[in-house]
Length: 442
Ligand SMILES: [Zn+2]
Image (cartoon, rainbow, N blue to C red; front, side):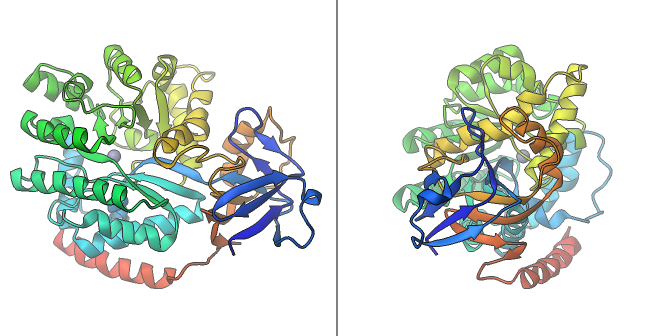
């Protein structure tokens, strides 16, 4: 079905100029939103019509920083108690990622993508690590993303922590993936050049990465100043702060994503703003790891595009948004601050970031935009209009069920039922088998 009309629902567009549309129908054709107009204006027998009366239509949500690879950790209780962020990395994530092989990489992305569909998230910007299965790892993730019909930008997080050979493999995997995206354009799959973080990369490695980034003319995706220790390490070993050091290698450009930015100083923030890079805040992860709360208000004031990611804590973007707002109130010690900064991160800035890779209109409901649409079971109990829609998103729609998810015009889930060529029950069964084996090796 590549041509149909969705009608009857109230449309929330994520377009500041006209955020709420009533009595309008959406004509979807060849993966795009072809036309938005009253239902009567369409030819009666033109194509199939789908009634979503009493529901809300929103754009497919975007997760601007995620780790598919963490999926098999759910319920793993073996990690030793961690007293700081470096211990969290050493006791959990750097033990886990060493055990991930091709099938774990594939199934992790598959399970997480299916969960994302169920929560109305259709675009994921991922950051991957599997140091003992680097080569082809992004291809495994791509295979899963393709099977589920969502969209993802992939990268491999290069790091020196497992030795020079694996650093080289990580560089090669990013380069190969980006070249393959350039050679075979696919509207579902994009690539960035991934780095773990400045504190796990030597100058020599940053130099090698920089040469590739320059040659490929691509964006970068890196954890930056997630914990104070990242800044401390770079100051102690290189005499520079994180952003200054990355910038000296030319690794921050207008296509770049810096995840977290919790401990950036104003000078670093201004440098990020000047470069036109985005900072993606991940509030639940930061609270969970007790690394601090990013000063999203300050960074927004400086004109930085602040996006919202989940850092794999959830695939539910509206849950992440809510926690981000409460955390920012606490950070600013003022419950009137931070609401619009966080809401803008998800509703306006994540689309701005995704549009750098997917093109104009991505993440918004507008004529000519990609038909990434989500239907939510939500009948408003107070007026829903241009003045109130953000409040409804945060306090109401976030608590409602996603009934249907569409990506590039393809219906991936309808009324809670996945319409894919794979069996979710079988996928989960295989995932449990792999998790049992992985946990034994952990
Ligand atoms: Zn992360």
